[in-house]
Length: 218
Image (cartoon, rainbow, N blue to C red; front, side, top):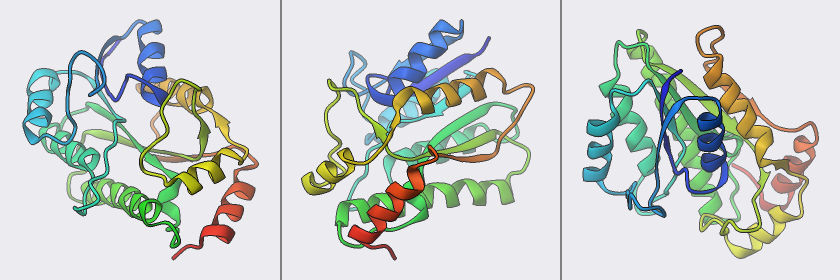
């Protein structure tokens, strides 16, 4: 069993991963701005505190996401860089949550475009790390597509209302389709290793083609 740190565990994919890890018998710590920890991803002090308190853990699930539209790097990527540096030359394990949005850049919605660009940077950060620090930690760049949010989960502020309404009409995966895959990777980390993965349902190509047609890509 492993000691697992999960960011953004209060709802969505993060909550599912957190609950499944607990059910699997792992020692799990979740931090989220919405729960009693009041941990703030955008605060450099809070990111440093997180590393100081839980840097001895075995696994870091880098899930929580906040896009600062005034900067070029999300706070998620800053936290990823922090743990990559701290865990250099170790066999610790990072599952960093990306998105298939990083493959294409919509042009007609500014927020979605910036989100896509940032997820592209997320992948480049990991690729550059592997070129310069090949001895660890082990990093899985896990990218997934649109999924159905639970009814009680608030809509993301990353999407404008028109884009959010549009996405809600697409065929999407259930949250557990992606969550189960992530937890299985974690549980099997000593017998199988995946550096990078893009996961979608078979019909997601149609979704993406529709999205590209209506919103345009760079």
